[in-house]
Length: 59
Length: 159
Image (cartoon, rainbow over all chains, first blue to last red; front, top):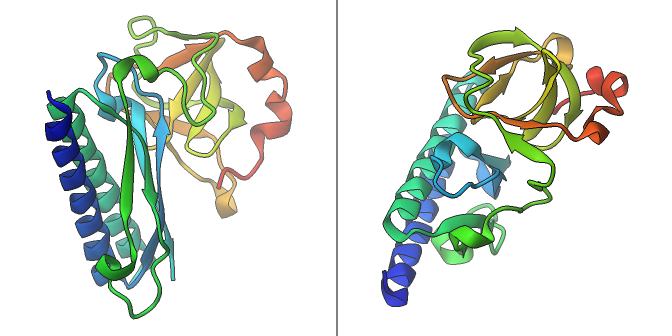
């Protein structure tokens, strides 16, 4: 994959996450303060089995 | 909104984020290192006005250590430890997001929310039943240093 294409996908991903946290705030009236990735990424493994996402919120 | 409802929405959001991160990795071959919100949202402002999301990526060969979690001394034993269901563990050490436990003489590192779930007992004090979710790989460690605070940590507050 070319760098330009990866950059485009990355920008799209950032927008998707922004959209998700906006929806979260609309539903809950809570603001998202922080998003953390926990866990270890391992080459060749199924990422979702090794990584947890935690969303921290603030009133 | 009730706490249970909030919790459900929060977990749903986390799952969605994880899903789109997985899709990104599949498409690009890049792994995610970090997601940062660059500016703090304030009451009455739209996210799109004040918040930028930045994602840092890593190539597969850069992946092994991140966020203070190191693979040094850690051995993965997917086949040997086929545990599933509810088990009593001794907590060796807890960390934000993951936990080291001892099960049948093996030291295991579980990723909270990914392959283990904590069941708090009275008043937020945890342990110490962990649910090992499905047949997911567990990371085990033989690093003896992890066991040094075993008793001390057992009744510590996890969250």
